[in-house]
Length: 501
Ligand SMILES: *[C@@H]1O[C@H](CO)[C@@H](O)[C@H](O)[C@H]1NC(C)=O
Image 1 (cartoon, rainbow, N blue to C red):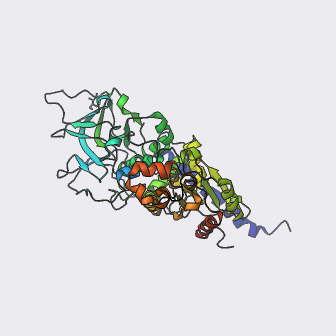
Image 2: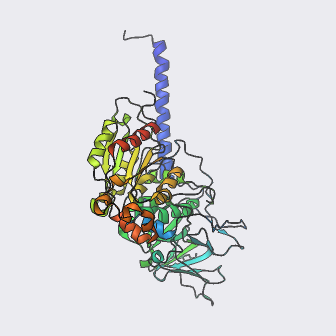
Image 3: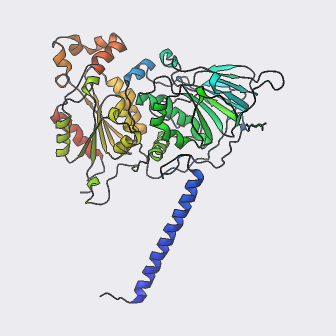
């Protein structure tokens, strides 16, 4: 029967029209909001992470006590430094609860606290300087004149304050009172109402673990409260590095990122921050953040920056969709770099036989950060040997599983500090697969009674360089398919996929 009584058809049609109107209204509202809040140059349609109630930073003078902590238990710097080795990976994942938390009021303000020095230790790894007033910044000489200062301060704006090697690649910045005598401070050639934020991309950058731990996450912790009204002034700027992460900076700021060492202007601001604030490896400690931001907020920001769709590892609702199968990503490495899987094809076949949609990816070989980020975000399980490639975890959806394969050599502590502990803050499940004697190529390189095989702790005692060369640079692995299968099955059980089947 084609014609039903119009009495029944009418309300339905009206309902549909209402729905359509509502959708149209939301669309208009959304584009308005986006036009209002989207950071300059943002190309993704995703929600801007940083929202400002008030685009002008207010300078608030308060006596609020600011906690400095000298006692966080981070990994010895030299360990973390090398731990993750040099490589470039562009990736990460983010996962978070599906419901965004209500935005906290963004107090875009420099808090000038009389009891707190201009430059103070914000963690064992970082010093941060903050000042407000008549700020005049000369990039080429790394000098900042501030009228409210009583003395000069010097700092290197990179989160490895006790690592002399890292800091040898970081320029020192000076904050000085205005020169005495009328009009002696250089005249402004450029005025901005944003807060200036000086940071360095010297140090250990280029290794994704360090890119996130030393620079990107600390920059987020420090910049978030300015609600986009902050200008990143980057010292030791490297364009190849900035190309990799520019979307992240654009997500955090409405202003152009500047190569400040090469800048000839006298830039004037109402306030300045020099040096980002470190909390912990690959994470934000919400209890220490001035505005309570968390690792989840950082991951949400990354999703917006790279246009990643999956906040959580939830299967597609369509039962014929290929995405109903959980996707497993094997992070590959070239054997010449060490820590490569010698049997990645067989591993992939085995995972496929368990029902995984299997992908292989070498972040080192990917020149496109957002493309690799999207691949990782599309996955539910990510498997890789300990190394900077696992930093791509930042892009995984919440509820996904990361499997860290720990090379032979009693390296569990290293695995724990670098990726196991941070995984919790990212709300991803964590599994470990420890390589045994019959799974390492070291057993082909050394006689069976050699200390490298028999007594790894003796090698550890020789220092980090010996440990790194022996167990990280010269070892490849061939996991036992039977044993690895158990780990993959465990991962499968952790996923929401097929639980209802
Ligand atoms: C910047 O602001 C100062 C103070 O308002 C003004 O005197 C100066 O002309 C401005 N300079 C530029 C380049 O806009």
